[in-house]
Length: 270
Image (cartoon, rainbow, N blue to C red):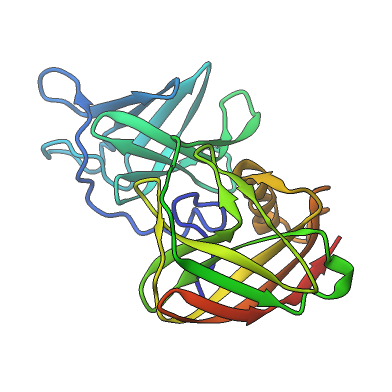
């Protein structure tokens, strides 16, 4: 079951198969063995692995990388998919991802281990475009104890191959406003999230499993969600929940033309 956003790569960055890379970067002069990308204050250089020489240089899995932003991170290219590099730093437990468009870095997400031994979790993505949506998800059985709190959810429509997010509203800087739970129920708007940083109308039909968040505040940033999930995915035991999270659960919803219903099932309570 796929129930997280591929675009953020906050659950399983390492499980990526390397593919040929279509984007073009700025090549060094002459017979180039490297390409450079820049943006958002980062400079990324992909260098040819000498064990795979004699090719018109296009970045491949197994090549070496060097990322700079004040500090330097070095390692190998673990995989490449859909204009996204999955980069595994030396001494790190996981890869992080760098999204590019042409020679421009458009986003960086994940844990970056630097040469000085420090590690920073980053989530640098461009502003998103939010369209209106007719998609709706009604979640019941929250229980009266959660009345007045706020719900939002994320899921993956496996039938139609769509990543979904459900909330009351979402801002261009990816601040999520949850729907107030009333009488143990909440109706959320549902958007499809695309890898072009678009939230668009959802009108799918089929079954979708959502991860449902109950928050004690109306707005939560995607940075806050991503950091929690990133830590949760790496831990051998569950990390302490963030202060904003009241409870976490799932809802198996059935949709017909973008309108879905499901019940909340508790998995973790703070």
